Length: 246
Image 1 (cartoon, rainbow, N blue to C red):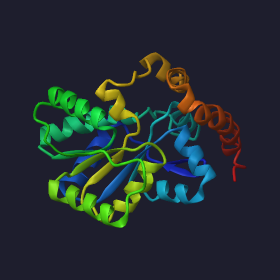
Image 2 (image 1 turned 90 degrees about the vertical axis):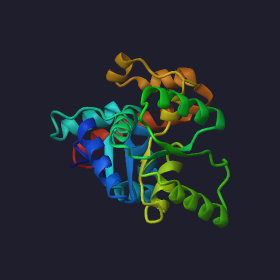
Image 3 (image 1 turned 60 degrees about the horizontal axis):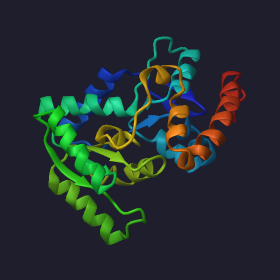
């Protein structure tokens, strides 16, 4: 385990992470998994309560290349990226092979419909037992209870959560003791795998420039995230490497 700006990151690869998730799901354990990129780590820096939520999760994988580079500089020389959308595919493959029922929470009705069709085509043995798109507003207590009960009744043992950071991590932390399923926060993976948003080319991802591709494709929505967070991350990362980050 390595820390980056006081976020605890697990030194795992796709195979190891998928195996852990599969074992937890087989035992119907309530767990949640975070995929940490620069955005998540800077949100954690700015909001101490959110940092506590991330550090209370059961598994935190290095989703972004800057995070991977930091882990390598801190001693994890062989660390590779565990990209949330790709981890999702690995876990779906495992779920199909092991007959583990899964669910989707998030996305729009259009995205969920396309996602289900594409994932069933790709993983023909996949058991999708639940799919729900919550409203943008906060649910009231009665609605929250109904959602939890519906997820439990569905029998889903792995639940992919696509609400975006930081909302999805807060939601998963709230539900950990209520839902006997492994919850994975996968951000924009629903949109990518449904084919409604383009995914950055692999070579840009390897260079750590996925953020630039996404900024070009969604400038109005993402400009603040990248132009505000990224420069600050560089400065704070240097302080962290020097041992003077607070």
